[in-house]
Image 1 (cartoon, rainbow, N blue to C red):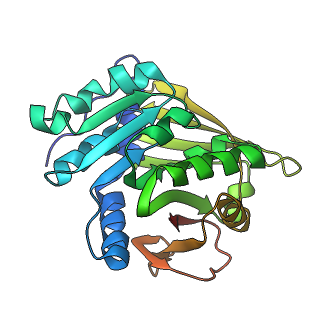
Image 2: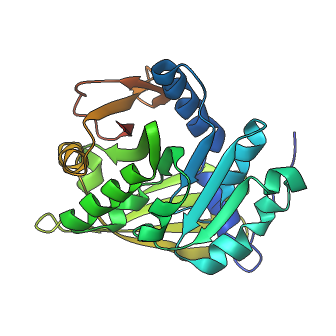
Length: 271
């Protein structure tokens, strides 16, 4: 069994830790492939990864199948163009030619003029950065305009009664502890401040390695906003539960959901 990495606060790269603790590109692309094949009778080829960060998902996507293409969009140029080199550096020249890194605001009209894609992905709840309904409608409408006919926008979502609590959740990972900190929630405005901390075996820690100032949207609100943006075919896929109450990693199309303390879901909106 491989030894866990020896991370410390001084030597750890917060993006490496985030990817290890949070991101699961293979599972997300398994979901995309399944729903796209079920709906369109073929596998998707082209994606746009919004709020793409280190372009981890995009690099995994072009490795997944010959011919897959990806556009990674992120407003923070150093993360997209510099931190992403850990991933783009693992690609062959041919694979690298199928990834485009675009340092831009996802609201930029220039993105609409690019070639249309099979799927736009806005994952890790990143679209919650938009606090105003009108801005979220604008984003969803522009994402729709970027889709080829029959394409889909995929959003992830977490909900449940615990989402509104100011609390922390700790999870052991290989070589470090991941801490999700719901630091503040204002029920009158929906404003939601969360942090990610990392703790290491030598007793050091990275506090507030990532901070998010979000609006906590609900599923009914998001469906209404998507309709106002022009989507009419919207699906909600919620994760099932194991007997112990933990998620089973399988997402099923649902019309309703139990009032669980926490649950994860994907929202699909088809053009």
